[in-house]
Image 1 (tube, rainbow, N blue to C red):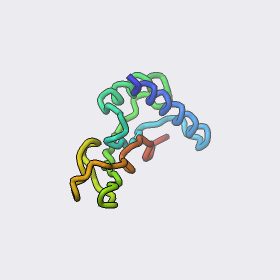
Image 2: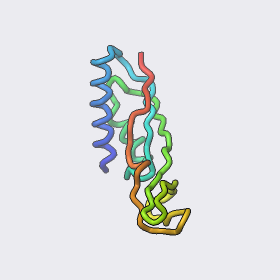
Image 3: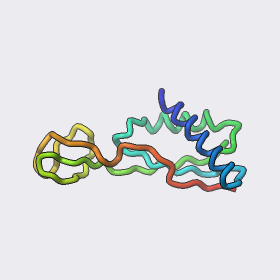
Amino acid sequence: MHEMALCESLLDSLKDAARTHGFAKVTKVRLVVGPFAGVEVEALRFGFDVVMRGSLAEAAQLDILDEPGTAWCFDCSDTVALADRLSPCPRCGGERLRPNGGTDMRIKDLEVV
């Protein structure tokens, strides 16, 4: 379950931000997770609760925001929205697509005290 490793990296980022910006507690974390990021959201939620225990983000609320998936179509030379990584281009039906959006997970913002 690589989601636990993602949560451990997230905790490291929260600790770094706390040192830099001088806050002591995180009450809310908002993450943007793209559909092509390879992240299982329910496993991420579970990992978040486990990894944050005893930390500055213990009992913090985790909000996960969806980001649309997009890809560049080599056949029609357009960026198109995709619901699924293996879907054909909705404009031309082409199957030569390169994802260019919705491939990452990132912190959008935090609520801190």
